[in-house]
Image 1: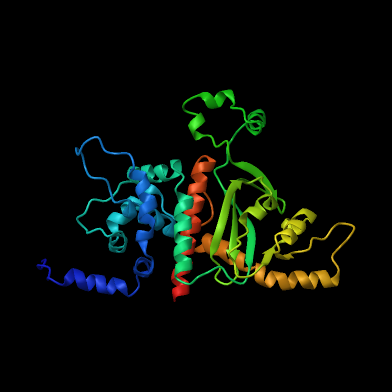
Image 2 (image 1 turned 90 degrees about the horizontal axis):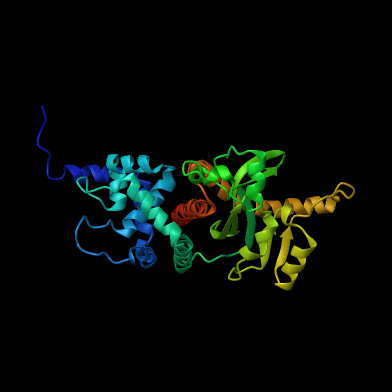
Length: 337
């Protein structure tokens, strides 16, 4: 036998959720309105008339994408979880009886952000918010990169050679084949293991372990090729840390010209191994440089993994940008304590 719900029953349920709902802290600490001006650019195209349903609020849709990357959900699963979870509805500002964006709507919104190249601006908006809250880049910066695997393409050797030359294989011109082929991702080898996909190059400040800048490239691009692009002039320290993959005469000269203090690991050679002094110096540098590995470890273990299931560099960059932005938001909540 069911009883009539009381006037405060739903409120009591929300109070209990507050005790363990991490999304409430995220929602309370971040000023989401800082993203609105950038997000509104998605709606620049005027409507022809007032017929049809009103579009979902852009800020609510953006928060849905953050939810997706916090919990590693696909579009269909995100739609279901919003319908199913009180905590998700509250985070998005939805009542249980409100209309929920479906998987196609989420996909189209993310596509609009990709096509208009707005994700980098959203990342910058939040970085400015971090600085306004007192989290300036301090104590130096660490540069590193991690491979972001993508679905492996089963191409013939001849087709791969054509792709590397910038040509389109004849088989890809078929409408059922071409849209499913990723011609931007590349193979690379690290520590004897081959990987296919992209790279997430990041610059992390030492004091707060926040991602201050990043670049997305295909996997075969060497780490050192985007090194100078990532360096941030507004850090309070001129110290720069990186592993031995970034060690070269050109980079050392560039750091000297830009008046940075190099803490790049020294690289040993076959006929010229590291001296005891150099090994000790690398160990000292590693105690600070390892903080960037904490960033990648957090994305791998607490955000469901580092990988993409999309096709093309533009969409991969969107997913990786959202992954980096979500990490910064989680880290900001932690720093606020």
